[in-house]
Length: 127
Image 1 (cartoon, one colour):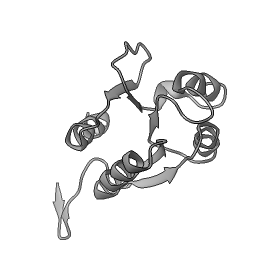
Image 2 (tube, rainbow, N blue to C red; image 1 turned 90 degrees about the horizontal axis):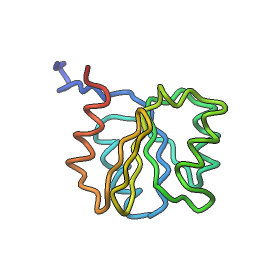
Image 3 (tube, rainbow, N blue to C red; image 1 turned 180 degrees about the vertical axis):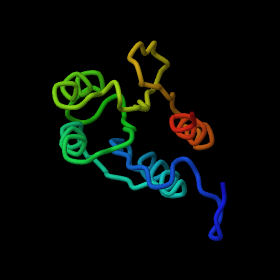
């Protein structure tokens, strides 16, 4: 679909919570999300991400497998008490491939390819 300003993407106007610990990786993902016309809320810790997800209507979550204060699986378990995580697409960035059996959770192994991440994000919103 296009408009007089250019192409409208499936991600335009979507809101994401970004909880990535490594500064260079966080900046690269932020740049990608902003290129995709998304609103980005940054979380320095897993607890900050939980607060943001409780306070804002977010379309998806991108997080590190290990945040400074807790592991991703613990964070998602805690978040489940207040947010319907089955309706929250989540991308978890990890150092090694793990079997992820949680609905709506996609794993991405480092080093993160921004082209592959863009493809995954687009697929979250393409019906």
